[in-house]
Length: 548
Image (cartoon, helix red, strand yellow):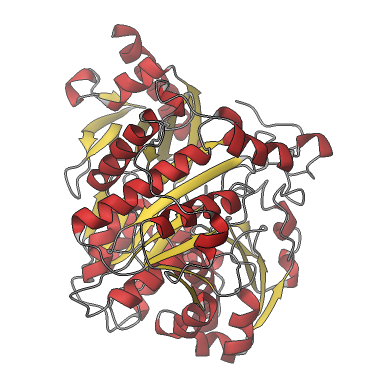
């Protein structure tokens, strides 16, 4: 899968989606529940799809929302449901569909008081704020977003009272019930016409922006940033955080320039990503090309994806930081500058994140908790304070308040942005400069993820591998010291394989949405050694798949 010739360049008109046609497909196209690709399917972060492929249509949202209402009743969740949406074209009609069912079921729903967009971390923050010290009337939430995915996609996420992504047991229940409702042609869905639902007494307005912005000082040292008089730049990438940055600047006296305030569901202002698609991936140097070009105007700058659960950090000294690099710096800084955190608060990472994070945790004397891919694995640890930080290589992370209590249990790109400014304010060096200092002592790894074609049958084989199916003892000249199909931090299946040596590793896992498997690899011996690991890993995976 090579680099597209227009990667990083403006999107041509021919690449833009037809929004009226997409909305028509949402209402007009009916999914066939007998077809796997048209059923409700919760991946690592909710149900995603497109109306054009009958994988995200009105019927899906009506069924999922009804299933959530029934799950709430079964679990005795009697408090309000916080509802947020991002700026994707399908988010507005899905919002209307969800409101119809939530009102039809008599659920108290909290929506933005200005009718605007609400980032994923803001919903998590609102749920946890409501539930703090509460024994009855717990709240939960829904975020309608496909995150960084292309403009034609839609997404629907459920966050239970823990505030973070629902775990597999919860999503399996919702998925099964929603598909049963689809198969029954939506018989059993309680629904109210949108005009009546919007006026229902159970729909309540809330100042999401004010509540979240005012509380930021409890998690990031906003006074240090103000005192340093840093010049900060932000590109919301047309996402749900667009209305948050000016209130943040005004409340805390910060010098923030929002370089692009445009909200357009075609996302026509986005440079094309590596494969020629429009994708709001703030960790991609191609999608972030506009902000990278402005890096010399700012001390530090940042961007976020459409629902603000991911972060992209741009420095004058290095441009866009690799997500793993920033995670390593964030861990080093936080555990060195949060004296009120528990001395046994651990570092959480997904097992496809850089081993440099392990070395930073060891240097700090902190326990490392390595889990499968998916932020849901960090929820309980962040909730009780046993994890100070949880992070994913895909540029998603959150951390505790300054007093060591929970902030969010979902990824929060906004605080990760502001943390970069706090680092610079308190150390005098930007995050990329701090990274170079860390690697001078702990090693400078070469890391890369590549996608390789895989059929559904091959993906199924890969997801169920056992260590015994890996008949090799060496990788790229090094002795293999571990073959993992479960995560060391919690023993949960990783849905793939990780092979580790003293100087490097690779991990392979099937994509949940594309006809590929993802191969992650890292070497502390340089790029040439990384290429050897990748070549041998791909050959090994090919032999395993051919043998089955």
